[in-house]
Length: 159
Length: 179
Image (cartoon, rainbow over the protein chains, first blue to last red):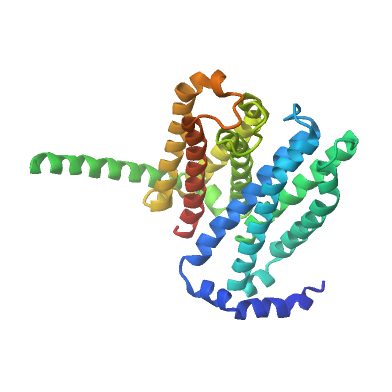
């Protein structure tokens, strides 16, 4: 549904010097994917701990805003690592990704996650006056979006 | 000298052959074959393996960073530990179970693989690091539990833990490329 609009972007990525260099290299893709994995582990680790705090299951001695502030840098570092390494991986085999169904589901989860992160999640995790229900809902949505992104990423390798 | 080294090589070769035979047998069992040839089960188990690693390592990371004096410096180390412990154990249990199922299915290919060996060795070192920290370093925890920057040996324990997990994850991902 409209992914054709992005086809020029995929074609362009495949023609870039880094895309060709990664495609030609025997080890580059594997090494980049390892860093991609570190990015998602950082993101999932931070989102998990934040979710546990919002649910009231862990780190209750600390204020939500304290936990949120401490974890925000790791979340951003994880996101940035995922994005850069993800673009590099896509540029080396754009055709495979363009035609992969789980890839587009992953993009849906990832970009929804990014928008959610910089809007509601950011507001909720920086405040100590949010109601428990809204906090818990934020936790569940962020965990579903980020763990979903990870699971769908794994699925690209199979389907 | 030449006698003893050749005796050693013979022992090594026979252990090697024995373990390899066990791995080939394991992968050929009905259970191993079932997982390997399945359409949904294998990818699902692998997905659970990756996400449970993210859960366990993602949790242990906050404890390690606290040990290093990098994050949550104003909270007691024991408090950070209590906050992540059960989730870390839960994630790790799921990672071990799913990992054993994957090994069951591909033991014959994992056995000679260099990255598989590096991964298992790094897992062993991660375990030894925990053991050394728990039995030795941690005995004086009351002295540095509240310290924003703990003593050097405590910071090293946290750093070594992160290092071993980085090796485990890298080698684990790379072994799948070389199967």
